[in-house]
Image (cartoon, rainbow, N blue to C red; front, side, top):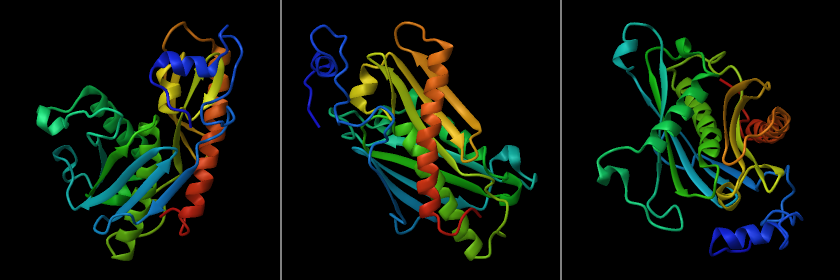
Length: 265
């Protein structure tokens, strides 16, 4: 993949000098093509469920931990809880960023992503079947290349399912109806007037429209986050982007089904 020193060089790659002729994506993918994806199960030794997600140049470790307690607002309710934490290593990107623990506070972006991951996972889980247990999903980005929040959701879902099967095998839970559907997420956007699936960092950096979509395996919407980075976009463009996201998420769910040989707990 070509390397760019600045956004102008990146823009020049996408377009001829008149900036009207599309030249294709830097990594030569088709507009509706996902980056190469691999999800490695049981990546960590101690977590109840864990994966390493490789999506393009992204590397994300997702680990699910089970605790036999719930937040105070759920005590004596008979209901469980699922929450998430998200972080990026200091050199996950081209320049080092200081650790949020050193700065003494979690940034707004991190808060937003953590809440997104937790909401997405809870949308497909029957929390009453967990009993009064909390499952914490840690998503740690060790190398970032755009779309880390959406790929974290996919990795978190697989790690969650593996953790639940672990609990079932240990007699902590009963199988059946805990997870009600598969879950996937992907980024889409408009770059140079072209609607693209699974934006890399280079593409995201110059996108005219940037959108993250979370859907169930059955095609239902969980969350849509979309922004016009410049001019407003049309309803027609929105519909095209959602169709593109649905195609990509369908491929992601197919991969999940292939990996999770025991199905959903």
